Length: 225
Image (cartoon, rainbow, N blue to C red; front, side):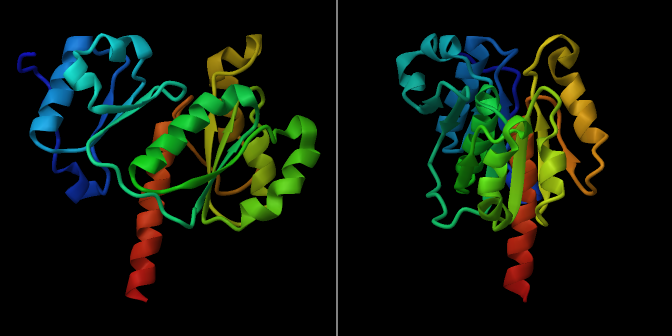
């Protein structure tokens, strides 16, 4: 591997509380390999997102072995793992099984920062009773990430049932007029439930990072008080 143009931002965490993440979708195998090699040399950590199995398998073995890979969420962790919290503060609520890949990216991102999460899958509004059975558990959490495609009504419904912050993640799941997640995005942005935050389509990573920022503020204020 040779040096590449990518300049790692190793001080980002000290400024923002979030490490630089490596978005792999448009990168070559060589570029990804160079970044991993630099991380290893500097004994630094990073989360790799949208890392395909093919990209991973084409890396040299010595670099491939440095990646804790999760194929379903297409995420890889490089560097030392942080032990997960024993008391999860974030619920990840997925409307349907088809939304799970994005939900899994959110969960892996939280885990990278040492935050465990509770998963509630297949509780979309088409079978509202499933959500209502879980709502008391969900409302006990500090934060909720909701992942939904199609008409993306889940965060709106939750917004009328629970008091904690809700981060909506529209997914590209759906037929025809779903338009690759645009309908879900617009539905969440147009929600009549006040105070719902919305990230980009399929951006489980971004939702988890927003949650980490919120948790850091909550923890800081708890320490001061």
